[in-house]
Amino acid sequence: MTTSLPRRPLELFGVDRLLSDEEREIAAAVRRFVDDRLMPNIADWYESATLPRELAREFGALGLLGMHLDGYGCAGTNAVAYGLACLELEAGDSGFRSFVSVQGSLSMFSIYRYGSEEQKQEWLPRMATGEAIGCFGLTEPDFGSNPAGMRTFARRDGSDWVLNGTKMWITNGSLADVATVWARTDEGIRGFLVPAGTPGFTTTKITRKLSLRASVTSELSLQDVRVPASAQLPQAKGLSAPLSCLNEARFGIVFGALGAARDSLEAALDYAMARVQFDRPIAGFQLTQQKLADMTLELGKGYLLALHLGRLKDEGNLRPEQISLGKLNNVREAIAIARECRTILGGSGITLEYPVLRHANNLESVLTYEGTSEMHSLVIGQALTGLASFRG
Image 1 (cartoon, helix red, strand yellow):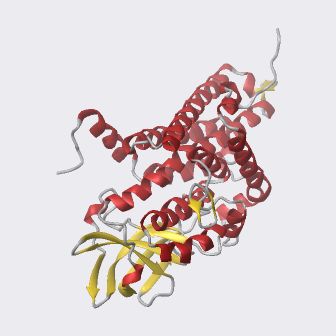
Image 2: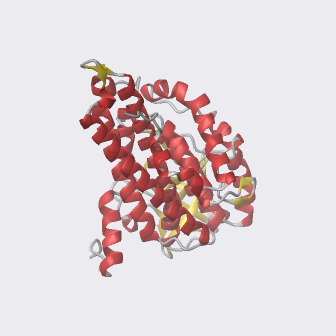
């Protein structure tokens, strides 16, 4: 009987042949950075609930911040390259991908797409290098899936705006130099840039998290926060503006979640090859191989879906409901893979010596944020039936 050499799961799909040279080089560069700089420290950062601020400049030096935007010091890569970078970052930890995603696809994109030229020049070059950090204030304590119900309100006072309200579950909130804050006005929902240190604007770090521990999550409080008229994002009118930013970030999650799944699967495969029970590696048992085969199938299918959606995005043909397809499927399968990998590792799987339960815990948050699985299911249902079941 011929014994084949072990292979990495995605190699079975020949996915590298589907990428351009530049896309492969970007993915490889980010993976090296993750392996060399992040992986040796992530267990300690996760356990201590720490995300070092200096990582922002390191991400910036690698060209990861706003990398799919053009100009203003941004790398201007295509969507697939951005997705692959998200995958490699999340293979390290969801917290790394979340930081880059919020910085580039929410905070920077909101300025890039809806800001004035003055706002772009003021913030984007510094954000691209990591000198300045941004956050995105949309979700509120009582309004997550229904952001249209937000209570944060901005009223005109002369030429200024005065903001009052609370935002919750804001990634990078306590690190941010500027927050994009969405508020109701008498003219509809509008966006505002609120710099850190503005009187009445405070942030509170959310602690005792069991998920996304290597990520800063905060509450934003705005009490009579006065900003000039120039703080308003002039092109942002209505709820469609923040939702378009969310679609940018959700696209990164479609790829990113696969990174957590791939790292979990590779860890489980390596463990199964080395772990001996009943005088043979547990990788040689049929039930273990069934698990490895099933997880490899779901990882590969998710990768092919992500790549297809990335090509559609680069063509300018990606629709919001298609992003929901990717986010729903890939996060759901990624968390299932991480949990199944934990069973292969047995007791070792619950420790930070191995990444699988850390990934599973992180994916509990990814499953919920930027659209819960239930909401993405209903978006798909509306696309199929024409009926919006989540609206009264």
